[in-house]
Length: 281
Ligand code: BG6
Image (cartoon, rainbow, N blue to C red; front, side, top):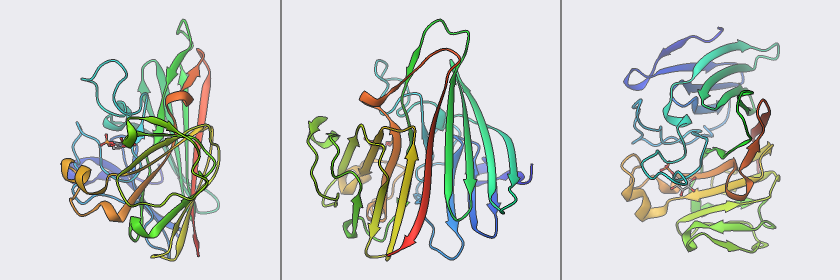
């Protein structure tokens, strides 16, 4: 291992990456990327100052891995929201420098009946590849949902536009999960926003006029994109989210949820990737 596992907040184990091109940090709890800071730029991933760092709870910010369900469990309200992957300790299998000076990490988790691998590459781009395999001895195909629930730093959510989802249908969780037609306009924020865009493979861009930068989110193997900002009241209701933090973040989540959940046959592997880069305006 080129990058050692060290002790982070509250003794939770983490891997700290420091290369010429980027600094970053990954907690084994949830295989959770809590920071990615390309050299010479502002940090890209947002973390709440109120996050728990507790082996029984998810981390608030960075990139929670939601799996094998998204949101509440479909039939058992006692089960944790967004699945068990984000509250479980993952095993670090590999960490190395590539010839180009990029940090490459591999973490694995057994979430029966699935085996999941998360490959992380940190440099001037941040790349995640999530491979999900259904055990070969399973008798029949099994569904799962997944999301790389990425929290991005923004200057003020009221200053940004999200482009790339103008022509997609979506489920609006603020309107009792109503199915809505494409808006034909970039997304702007003036209230709590919680939407699942479906049947979309498209690249999404966060245009931030306050920061003078553009965050570009490319993906593959993903047909849903979730967009979320909790705004004022919901922030107050969340114990691990500061009351005044909501303007500084937006979630754009690379996902396969609801209609786009994945049906995997025994022994098959599904791959979903996310690539984040930053450009000046
Ligand atoms: C988003 C969901 O992905 O995650 C929201 O669409 C949810 O409905 C949010 O509130 C945060 O979820 P959690 O479980 O991390 O508080």
